[in-house]
Structures are given as structure tokens and as C-alpha cells.
Image (cartoon, rainbow, N blue to C red; front, side, top):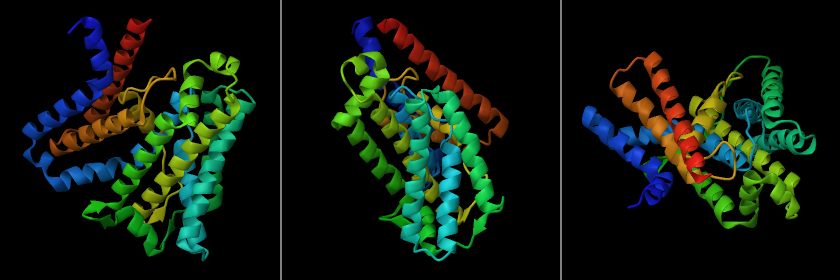
Length: 314
């Protein structure tokens, strides 16, 4: 195999190979790693981060970034819990939370695409505003005593597989279909790859960006429902720092921060790698302090590989 073919192969399948090697190493170091109950636990643990990361992938492929997903999660979860406690049917409360999440994403999209504010700055403002709105809505207190329907979503199982895993896989399939097999998805890649060329080609730049941010808000709200159900409460501080974990999963999964390149399937593998790392280090009794160092090293390594691949293509 020529060096060029090897680089192309590693660019496509390197992240999957890294996951297989990591899983094999952990299975040797800790025999309990491959137990079905532990593997299902890993999938359950990564479900919320993966949901946020799927939405984040859509934004980053489109040439943006969203730092507000953790705050969107918190406000959406609080609204769902508050509405349910106010007597709303659980299904209606959940739908309201999804609408709110998409709406907050649209607000971000308006400032990015309409007002042409840098995505980092616009969504940093959203992070602060939506977190403040959550604290105002909850008065800084958790909302507890939720209906059983929330518990089923967060802790239930179907066919022996946790419901959060089914939700994650379903949203993964939906996002993959939208990005890979629809005209809207192709437009997202085009705008992220070269916005000026996309504009000259007549693509609706503003509408495409509005979609990516609204979709990220929807993903965050879905993650909020899963997390709220798992905890059986809505915490006003929920989601703090989740945006960093979501971006980490996207980057480790091979999506370029420059936009126009990446896949949600890669993001899923990236989220799985981070989850397997956390789980494996817990099984090996590695200090939480060292776990942070290892996770940071993995992210930097993924960024370095992304940069080397981009340089080679230039």
C-alpha cells in the first residue's frame, strides 16, 4: 500500500482501529470490561454526551461551534420537569422541552447567521443567558418528584437494552440520514467546506446555519430529557461543562473543526472511546485527576492527527 493510500485509509478508519485497540487492551487489563452488563453500562453512560455531540457535529460540519449546549440542556430539562409538576401530561411537557431546545438553538443561529457574530462569541453569550434563565426559572433549586414516564426514559429498558441507548441509536440514525442522504445535509457540508463558494452557488447560507443550530438545540433538549429521567430530577446546574465533552467526542471522532468534513458515525465512535476510557480507568482504579490528563491527551492527539491530515491534503 502506497503512503498516500495508507494516509487515506487511516483518515477513514483510523478512529475505528483506535477504538478496537483500546477495547482489546482494556479487556486484557480488566477481564470484567467485556462483561455485557459493563458494556451496556458504558453505552448508557455515553448516551447524553453522544446526543449532544451529534448535534454539535452538525454545527461544526457546517462551519460553526456551539458552546451553549450544556445550558440549553439545563433549561430544557427544567422546563419539562416544571411543566410536568404543574400538571401537564408528561408527553406534552417533553414536547415543550424539545420545542424550547430547538428555539434556543434558533436564537443562536440568528446571531451567528443573521447578525454575523462569530459563533464562539454568540454561543458563549447563549451559554450565559440560558444558564441564567434556568436559575431564574428554578429559583436555583432542583425540581424533584417527577412522573414515572421520566423514569422510564432515563432508567427503563426494552429488550434488555436501556432506553437511553435506544434513544441515542435512534437519533444517531436520524442524524446520519439527514447529513448523508438529503439535500439539506449536502448543503451543510458545502457551507462548512467553503462558505463563499456556497454563497456564489446560490445556497441558502442563513437557512442552513439556522438548521444546524436548531438541530443542536433539539439534540440538547433530548439529552436533557434522558438526563432528567435518569436523575428523576431537573438540576439547575445540569449540563455544566457538557459542551466540552461534546466537542471532545466530535474532535476525537475525526470531524474537522474547520468545517466541511466529518461524520456523525465517527462522533459516535469518539464518544465511545471517551466513555470506554473513563470506564476502563475506573475499573483499573486510576485516580480521577489522572483521568483528566489522559482525556486531554487523547483530544490533543486527535487534533494533531486532524491537522496532519489536513496539511497532507493541502
